[in-house]
Length: 329
Ligand code: NDP
Image: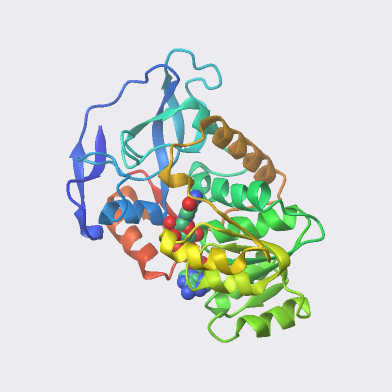
């Protein structure tokens, strides 16, 4: 089968086309004919060699996939050949990713794609939707009378978090660097939008919450946003972060917040996937998409798999709005 692989760590230019043997599904596995994927920061970190969790060389990267089931292994009853599925299912050690004609996935990591989305649209959702769900619903326990702040409100994870918080009944504020992004954050449901380059934390806490602070703050950025999150939280507020670059980032912030707030850290990409939970979250997300509660925000410039280098460069430039989609050649 055709694939795009890396044989060394480095910049976006390290991707190269390759021919690889087509895999066969083992017990519990599904063979997907890949239609689309998307770029996540973790794919770039693996490509650069920054995190030791990537597949072996020649490495097929990319976690997110949407496609059509080609064959199923022993014991798989949830999917049949021909089913359209989506999931976050590989691109990690021992699990080749989506930048190929076919990809193997554990059936429990997959769900039927939302009916109202194309495969290309569905492929941008899995990792960011699972992460936003775990942050907002499971760790953050968003409630109807909460005022929630999302740092990076038009980022991959952030745009899902804004919408999930609104679905949970909360009022939402979101940060974004550019006017067009702030307008988009409003369309996603944020009632208070913040240009974090212009306003101090105390200024926007005053403007958005009358000085009370936010009940739940979601940091999708890492420092300095983690410290700012703790500053922006109300007394006994909750802070969820996914982007502390190291425990050094997290520890001082955590100590500062002890007894005033609760800080949760999500680091699930560096652990094994929580299989059944992830498939189930994607089923919930599909329902929310099909009922019009959440929608993917996709950067206007679209890419094919052969343009994966340009797609990585765009993500790393910080200029993208929402998710970067990649369609199989
Ligand atoms: P994106 O690149 O899509 O979004 C990042 C966002 O950060 C952008 O919206 C950008 O918007 C904003 N941003 C950048 N710099 C700053 C700053 N100094 N202050 C405030 N906002 C800023 O990435 P994702 O949303 O996909 O992922 C975000 C992070 O979370 C990554 O580090 C990723 O690796 C990590 N992650 C962790 C997971 C886990 O542990 N479970 C799972 C998924 C992601 P703007 O233009 O407004 O600055």
